[in-house]
Length: 256
View (spheres, rainbow, N blue to C red):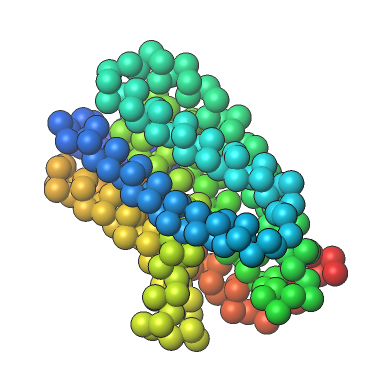
């Protein structure tokens, strides 16, 4: 992926304007939309959990949530620093990015397995859903790694970082928009499941590409490759989710 993006940047991408006067505002709007999806998806669920006096979440869930919120806070701060023209602070703070990303890549699967083990025997248990959780962290991990390695190329770096984040925010949007999508499309079938899980994040993904088309009249190679990678991971995740063989494997992976 990195080689292809770098190669693309070396050729026709010279026609891609690295900056546009709308960029700083557009990035903030994108970040705000991500926060909206997260807040609308998780806050009501957490409030309901507390109100019903349900058992406390496992410690690893709190640690995972802290890491995720930390990532979003770091991303927001980095965008704000560039808006106020402080690239020096942006670069210094950016050193925390790879460390936090590595923590999230480890915590994501570990948290998913822990929660699935605790859900065994519960009517809502869904071990096959590990495919969606693992697919998200694979999308994030690859794109975040590419973004850090291409940090000297601002155009590629910022697009890959935002795409990496779009690869893991689907959970918030699905909690918020999943039920209306299910009511509209119905609960059964491949594309119904895909829309229920990913419709919100795809709206942002498409909007991101549309912004480049409006301001540059073309898509950036990093966007094309990154969006394709996200789509591949998510399409594969739904295919596995609906596969009986994967469900049997996931049950064995959980170990109960």
